[in-house]
Structure formats: C-alpha cells, structure tokens
Image (cartoon, rainbow over the protein chains, first blue to last red):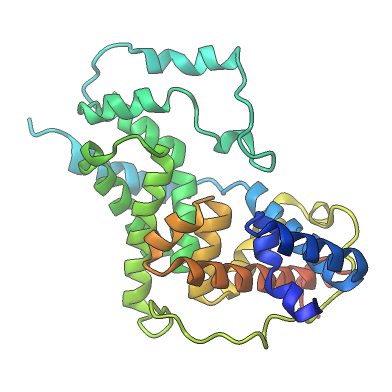
Length: 78
Length: 233
C-alpha cells in the first residue's frame, strides 16, 4: 500500500468502517510511515476538537425573536 | 408562565433526580451537556399532547446547538436564524410523526439541516451540488505536515478557539462543510447524513474524507510550531 492509497482510507479508518484485511494493511502502513501516521493523528485530533467545542450562547436578540415567534405562532387561539 | 401549565409533572422533577445519578457518556469525546437527559422522552410526550411549556423546555435545551448547525450550513446569520425558527415551528407541528425510534435531537437536526440547506441552495444555487462530481485524489495529499505538539487547542483561549473553528468551517466548500457538520459535529450516521442532504452514502464518505483532511490542513495554520496567532502564514 502506498501513501496515496492510505490517505484515501483515513476517514474510513478513523470510523472503523473497513474490512479486517484493509484495516491490517493500513495499520501496517501507518506504523511504518511517519507522515501518514501524523495525518491520522491530526485528523483524529481535528474531529475531537470540533466534537468538544461548545456552541456559543444564542445572541440575546436572536433568542428573544425565536421565543417571541414561537409564542405567537404556537399559542392556542383564545 | 406563558403557556398553559398542566401542573407539576414528572419531567419537571427529573433534573433534580438526575443530579443523583450521572449518565454514562455515550461517546467519550462528547461533553456531558450534549447527552440526552433521561427526561427527554417525557418532555416529548408532554409536548405531543400540546404542552407548550414542555416544548419550550426542549427548545431551550437545543437552541444553541441548532443555531450553530444552521450557521455552519448557511454561513449567513439571517438565514441561520430563519432556518432555526422554522425548524422549531415545523418540529412542533410534526411532533405527532416523531416515533421515538431515534433521539429527538437527531430528528430535530434533520429538520433544521433541511431548512438550512433550502436557504443555502436558494442563496448560492451554483455552490451546492446534489449531483456527485467526479473527484480526483489530487487535492487529497496533505500540504502541511508538521507536528502540532501536545494539546494544540489549549494554546488558545476558549473564545479564540471558537472563532478559529467558525473561520475554518466557513472556508470549506458548502458541499464539504454540510457533510462534516452533520456527520462529525451532530454525529448523524452516514446513512442519516445521506438522507438529510439527499446524496448517496459513497458521496457522504467521499465528502467527509475531503472535509476532514481540509480542516486538518486549515487548523495546521494555527497549530504548527511558530504559527501566527491569526493563522496567516
């Protein structure tokens, strides 16, 4: 397996979405190729950073408009 | 209280009870605040019966995340706000169709993604493709390969890091960022993402690979040794 073939499978490798055979080939390539291994490590880190990021609070005016709209549109007719 | 209250129900007490029994994390990387609280199905059941206070509680739990989702997809604050409002309105009016075979949040994400995608396609009709273009491997090979060192994100303040993440997501092509947001931030499955965007499973995988590699490349501008704080190097 060469680097180009390995990089094409990085995403499936991180998701564990591979056959056992291909997974072993990739593990063997990443163990030997420092550069491809760095791509795997940094891509995994990239995903983790996004997963762990907390959304910011809703801007007060956006929140106020949202709840105002919901109240107007969803309140049962008197 | 703005809405008719049907009296104190069990879900209103659950947050207090839940404090005694922490939920195990579903995903070790996921923060506790993003895990469904165990009273969610009670809230949904109450909202289905017309309890608007219960629905408002659900909105309050997810409004920040849904706004981030619609912002990430549309890249436009006005569209993001409209998409979020319509997503909550539609979710309420279609609650009877929610069968409870997935998490309420996952169902809500699909509605919100649809609203956001409609606005994105309207505003930028040529920048979002439903068809699947022939993609080559040319752009896949990483450009920058330098060690980031341990905990690169910890070198930035939280607000600074949020700005960086917003900036690099916004720089991605809409095709790629939509799939990344649904698959990796909202944790939809590949199949759910394909259904939400209206593309095939292989197309989701292909776009996700490119999105992840491009984001790694872009974050490298900030994380590699000697990088300027603004990422311009």
